[in-house]
Length: 382
Ligand SMILES: Nc1ncnc2c1ncn2[C@@H]1O[C@H](COP(=O)(O)OP(=O)(O)OP(=O)(O)O)[C@@H](O)[C@H]1O
Ligand SMILES: [Mg+2]
Image (cartoon, rainbow, N blue to C red; front, side):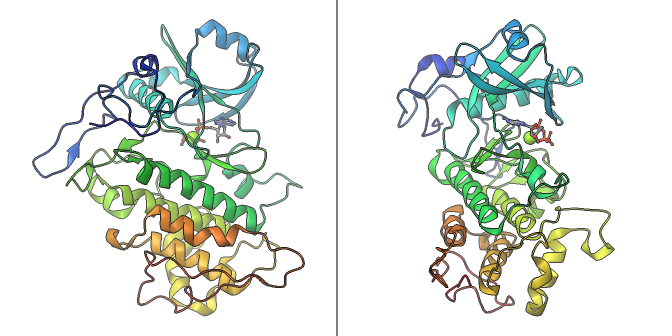
């Protein structure tokens, strides 16, 4: 098995992060494993001088976090604290594995996250600063993302907090798509992220997004294999239907999940919300209903978006989301096509220009026959 294509050339880095087992192959052509990668093969295309993730002692992280004083978030894995590394003068986020998760599964997620992040590098993936496996303690140290997660800016706005404008939302969508494109199309074998959702999209000071949480990531199928078989994990409302029904995880399962997140960015609505009216509880079902009836498009847009967006631009973003959400896996586009389709929407028009012509959708983006006819037309920002 090959290693990822963007790796540290250091043998030391491989050894440090060796939480790996080789994957087995099933008779049905699937790769049935929850093991992420083998560390035995030499890295392809090594990246020289990439900083090595550091092994911290628990005491070093006690000092860095001022005895775990400043909580910045909490998730299923554990609590996240703000920290500061004196030696490198770096702000960091330190995630501590919950004590009740310190069994096999918790350890596996910890090892997988450290292994994946230690070997992958892309501007739209969170940077792993280091980790700590000291006695019973399991902690992961990341670069600090000052604007926190997308959730805070999309759904959990504080009083007086400005909502994201259209172009920032589209820029976030493009950055996330580029991160997935790297995992799916630039890394060999591909990596399936599996847990895309707003809380796993962190934002730097310029709203550039980075994917975080690789504890559920898996190596994708190789050769003639079409999927990997694994227990259904991830977050309800974001699963691709074929994965949820069968546990067969495909690279294109991530593309579906991206479609859910893009709909959330457009609408400002959560993927699932039991407080919404019965037929609106599930965002995808609701989105598909609107898709069939073009006249209902305006209510799709988050009321908090005040930018003047042409219907064509809104339709373009909506069409891309819906194509990603195709039930037919083969109809879902590659992430490279998603990037190409969305990039023009993320360009803020120059004030002197009354409109901007946008290129047609890439050929790989096939609009369903029962969908609206627009989408390939030029899209104008007015
Ligand atoms: N590197 C970071 N920089 C800044 N804030 C972070 C960082 N990592 C995590 N956070 C904050 O901590 C919160 C909790 O993150 P965590 O990944 O533990 O859980 P989650 O994604 O919210 O939920 P889940 O366990 O379902 O993945 C995030 O939503 C974010 O606000
Ligand atoms: Mg998370």
